[in-house]
Length: 147
Image (cartoon, rainbow, N blue to C red; front, side, top):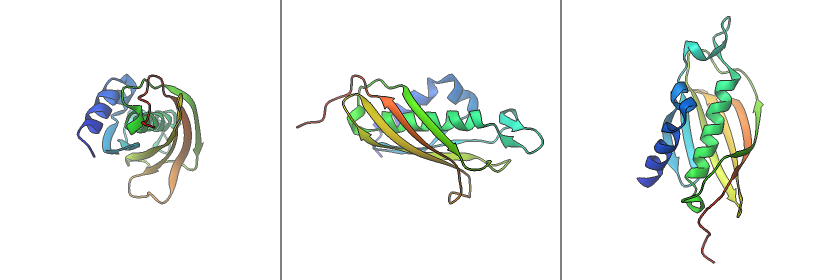
């Protein structure tokens, strides 16, 4: 992981009020790959009877993680990005009282669009996803790859 990647990603996530409000933390970052975490917090619970985090908080975690993977992609230096499309399949509720982690990979970048896939899971249970996502992001002003 180059020092520029976490600095750029931290600046990106710290600029987003919802990322700060949810307590999103950078766990890992590399070329086109990011892992973020979100702590369990009572104010994020969607169902007080079960203690399960609200799906909207999980959506924000996944969207931010996907955008972070785009920001960290080598072909996206100096680019501006925004979510064009985000599809999330919720597989099961996250375990109450535990962090949720998300991993995203920007796997393809065209002249105008970056494509990302992601997965979220409850801490300690990476083999059983909470949600899966596919996304497309703008790739405006990106540096063109050398021929």
